[in-house]
Image 1 (tube, rainbow, N blue to C red):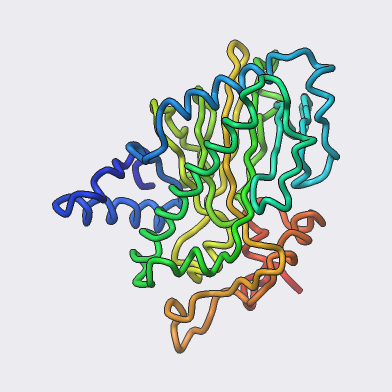
Image 2: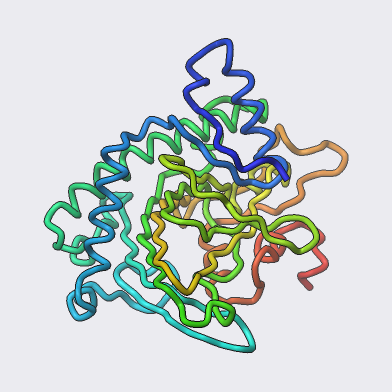
Length: 313
């Protein structure tokens, strides 16, 4: 597995270092779809403020947080809490608030906390800055594949962005649950900021590798649509969140999805003329419907869209 030590993006602005930085990103994308970045251009003052307003919200009394409760369905906006211990199968141990930020037509402020007072302004500034980072990373990844810099951004279409504030409180029996079970992200690219260790990425031989918490670093992971567009050359990675018994961990995750009516298909430049594409064309709404149906667990969801896939009758 490629190292999870942070990649210094400032090197992209130095012609003596740029090729090395690009090569590090390419290696991470090919080997495990996960990497960390520092000197990413998002101001420390802004990331610190986002952590502050997030903690202030989670510290509110439960009844005040429930004012922003959302529906218990995949992708729903608003506040939620799931604390489940289970001997047979690890479940969930977290509280969260999910907000849609782009497109503006899907930004529903009735789900956005009014306390602390700076919450809305901070989220708007932060998600705009991280959107710029996502576009810069997609350009580098496109060029690493021999594509034009805007290829992946255009292939994903209109940006649909959401941010999830996640809080994992101390758990009395951490062996009986997970913060989040094993999964791969379904969209395009995900950018995560974490406070404390707890994120794990799937490694060889059915083992898990801890993603270390580095100050001022972002964790970047490729999601399932990138695997399809790159015709399997770059993989999305399964990951999960674990909990502990003595401290709270928080994370702030920004997701970038295609529009539901966006057609997703392997880039022709990455398809072997003899072997053909590994994945079929699909509209993103089909992928979301398969996810909601729960017919395929974990990594098998993206594999279910493979051509001649034995998992699909």
